[in-house]
Image (tube, rainbow, N blue to C red; front, side):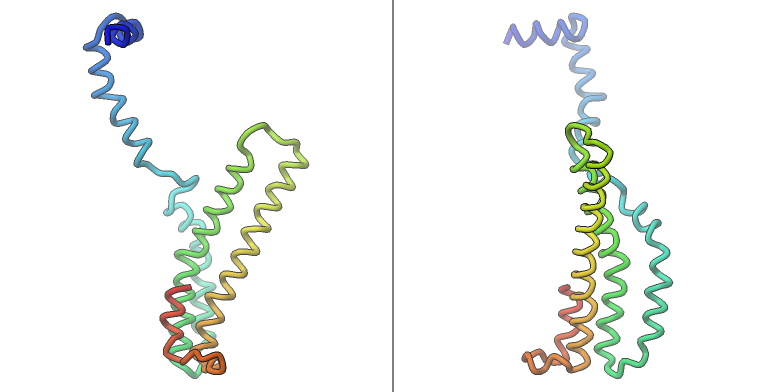
Length: 165
């Protein structure tokens, strides 16, 4: 214990009181902010601001899908539109940013290697996004239109499926 006190006094100009004040006033809030603070590269509101331009596209798609006879199929597409704007785009943007951050970690790569890594990350995220959006957008609508009955999926399952995907 005396060895620890001596080390602390050496770091804080020979005063344990100075150490206690520093721990209680500045160190504790900084540590708590680090543990509970923002972990994402960009905050959610910044991603949503960036993706605000997707809202008119989705609303346009909503108005052009009035030809779908089934109300269930339309509702499934509406759920998909809201989900893609408020969940799909932000999650995939965050995934691309996180992959870029992790691939840039460590020794600095050459310019060519860095470019290929970033193109690869973008391609991976884009492919995953297209696969997810096709599954989440088309499958519930097809169920709602009755085109999946041969697989044992009844029309009413389109809305639960839309919320799950």
